[in-house]
Length: 226
Length: 388
Image 1 (cartoon, chains in turn red, green):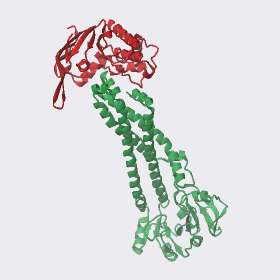
Image 2 (tube, each protein chain N blue to C red; image 1 turned 90 degrees about the vertical axis):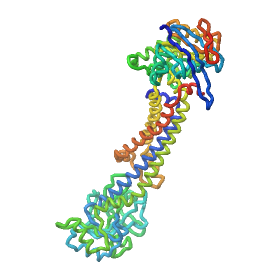
Image 3 (tube, rainbow over the protein chains, first blue to last red; image 1 turned 180 degrees about the horizontal axis):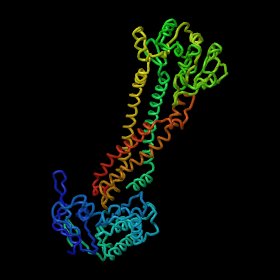
Image 4 (cartoon, rainbow over the protein chains, first blue to last red; image 1 turned 45 degrees about the horizontal axis):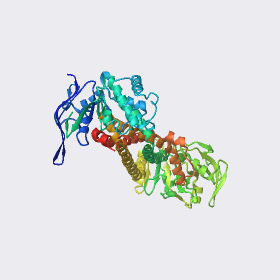
């Protein structure tokens, strides 16, 4: 099967006191390897819930979501954590870098979460982190603390961090939401470069400009309307 | 995660400083209290050790030094003439705090110890004496003084000094007997002839005790039994009373000190736990991020525990280093005239005190980190990522 992310009839229901809130209502989704997919939709449409599902932070109440051939609803919490560590690279709107760590240490951090054959020694981790920082054009800023960087630079560090474990796909949650137009252009370009190297990118965005040359999925009332 | 905990600690300096000061204060207080308890115990043991092997015939209960006991000299003579008593090594003795004497360093007064000249060894025992160790052939006001007495009155062998209306001529100075900073009775003593001691203390024909060395084949137990049978209204102080005296003197203080220790300990844990809880709250988003990118729950717990342990360890080391100087400063504030040697305090400190402090640091670090680590472990990554 070519699909990297396959979801069929996904429901997510939250209980608020006696009321049931359906964030996703039988949503279907398919993302193939190597694609750059943009998910758009108004606030409250279910974007974040879908992103949490694809990011293995949450599981469907009903329906099947298959990530790289494995059904997430049948995975234990430990297995979901492992999938997040090995197969998914996360990019957040607010960058979410660890403030006490240098740029290089931030990028190295996800490699601590690898287990078994994927575990790396210290020098390999360092080399890989530097390699990823070079890819995003921050080879000169490795020893800086995140606080010393501009927003665009911080987001590029986040992209390097997302890339470092060679994930199956990158999940970007409004990666340009906190950036000016110049930095936005730069980040989108970087994501396209990453995608052109073979990494699948799934991006949630409000900005139509950033969806150019991507497959756009529109989500409304908990279902995808492509 | 240990390296991350270190970097976190360096990045949040004010929070770390609060924690370190908390642990340091706790270790400092517990350490000083433990040293005080240890010194008190050692001092009392040392004091009582000087009576080892002797029996003290006393009145009004067993105690050492027996200055509360009052006996007539004639009764003393009767005891001295008994066959169980070695007349050459035993002596009638008068113990009395010196009137107008100096009472420094926590209240140990200069103790007048009157003995029959030539029988000084019954009290002095194995103490090394600079000058003369016997009063035989010396003037009536000749004294052999303890190390602390020499310091208090700033005198040495050959000096004559006056306290109140009484003059004393120093013929010998004993080297310090007590192993700790706390002076023993022998260190604060002024050994003189019994008759002069009676004059100085205004206790003519009175003595406090008979220091008895058993004669011939008599065991200390046999002497004690015989004397107790013949003099049921009097008391015999022996080696076995040592522990009883220590317990009587220190049990109340020990319970009180240990209660203070426990209180400080609990307050410290709560304080540091609060700071660590604040830390977890501050780190909510970071924890969410770590969880989202695949960090295991146990690694998050380890991070918080490491941070707590690092802070406790640093506070603990600083606390241990400041313990002896604090002990000295407290001593000076409480009126001590002599400072204890700082190195001596560390050297004399038994391993158990240090072990206790290290255990306190570890327990504080572990317990204060447990609840925050547990809470951090329970943070949902989805909620944490939304946290502002």
